[in-house]
Length: 129
Image (cartoon, rainbow, N blue to C red; front, side):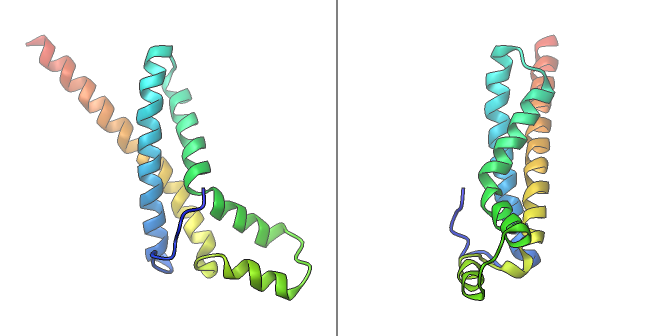
């Protein structure tokens, strides 16, 4: 999903901002799939896999498509290249931003998994008292 990136920074700062957005998306998707998977009897791998797939598609899909296009697309003219580059925020650091988004989704899922596991252990420990 392409979102407005005009407010984001450039370079590594922009990558960290995009990674933070992706981390939130990954955490939300994992929380959603944990709730669904608990009722359906899913294992953790299925919850994590669907969360990562949809988190990447939502938060990094447009940047991955741009990165793929600029590397493998057939650019017919210099004018077309300029037009496509004008629509991309910080094209010089597009690869860094995609990398940060991919890592961010994974980090968000991991943090959500830790929080849910900690909450479950705490609830189990409190019921033993």
